[in-house]
Image (cartoon, rainbow, N blue to C red; front, side, top):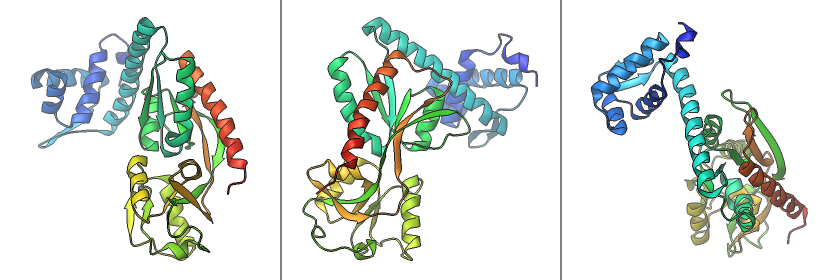
Length: 315
């Protein structure tokens, strides 16, 4: 492979867009439809890219195409380049339209329920023309979007840095996990010595591929208990909250979800899970825009009040 071939002018942005679409669609026919071109155009362009790269990027099969090991590497970087170009276009468009760049913020359950909404309310009072796009997804997907430049900042539980990007983490506060129920739940006011007393209730647990779920599973295992027999797996707050309000279900959640919702309550039962470090994550070698800095500044201000609230004794 000649590395200079990537920089001699033959590799075009359209090539990068093409490989990402082919990877997403899984077939050349699907990629052609998505790009509004014919299949021969996709085939010819893919051959051009593989000729420039000097390796096969996709393995062809009767049911479509799949990336080779070389293709996986190329596609990852192609997504990052395409994401950065799209971000540049969006920033320029917003600067032309409003004089301020948009901010794209990724979040998960711990950040979406209290910290981020309160931040946005305050931010829009002082900067009403600042556009903020909120993206909710699983932590792994958000980490990928951050590294590709598809979001500018992450808010929520801090995750370890991934191999594909060096992230800068700023810890804001620790939020414990507690068992949350509806305010009129029959268990409220009754003595509860541990999760053993709640095994017959419906439980709402996070999805299996989340860090909190792993901790909950380990908690039951350490107590020598099987998982409850009646389980719903859900990490979506709207669905989760509705089920809590209309059933006797119990859910291990970041404490503020139960403490700040007048229709929900926190059971007085400590859980031996790892404290959730809530904070901000950005890409270390990508300076945040002025708009992103405004958002981060407001997040920090709201977090200071949240941290103080967590330290106050609760009735």
